[in-house]
Image 1 (cartoon, rainbow, N blue to C red):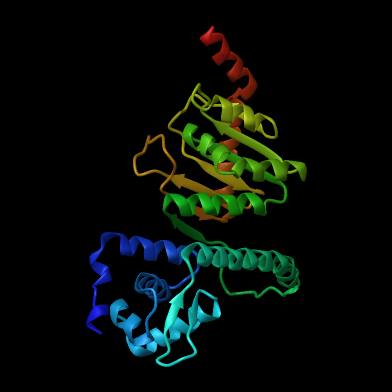
Image 2 (image 1 turned 90 degrees about the vertical axis):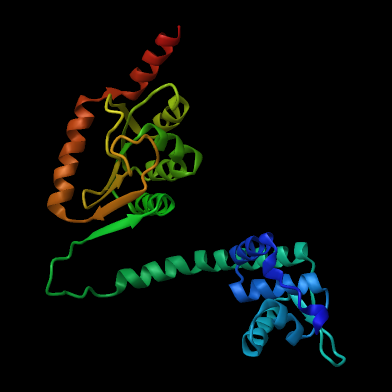
Length: 283
């Protein structure tokens, strides 16, 4: 057993490798076992568990999952030893499994939505509006994409200059273009400058876009006059992606900010005209 007592946690890359394996669908214990077994080459469950610092029950449960996924093989002779699949083959299997799950979710989504639409409402003894705080840049952006795809009538957006470029580079523009094909009204307000000129041109292909002089404007997304997401940065005038956001479907709050958006829109410069001005300045 002494030959298997190497402390794998002493290597700085181990935790990173285990974390990456988890991204492919393994639990932390499964990822540790697979990694340790790959380094040992072939070993019994007790030997792998000892190096991975897992108890007997944890080891056998996790090893069974790895067997079921086809990531390890077990010998027929005793003592039973486990051998790992090569990492390239293992990742290929895990990727195929993930792709299959996505296809299954896509198949089930319309079924769930239909069942959801047919389910009766529950009338509670309270107002049917709420406020939510969304924390973290990635979560804010993911929540924004979800809102865009939920629109039925109109999407009104106010963006900072850097957000305008982020929406184009990370796929939000594709969602908006898809919504435009559904005849959903799209209006966007942003501070258009030389840095985001190409992104602005992209938006003009499918959305109304106007330029505001207020580069420090607070970003927001208004969906169908019924809900709004207001994004906040850690510094009031920070020209970066929002770190947190507040969502609400409070009708009076949404209505007030929709009126504010309309005022901004009425006083903003047409996007194409702004781009023409930038071209003249360069000349």
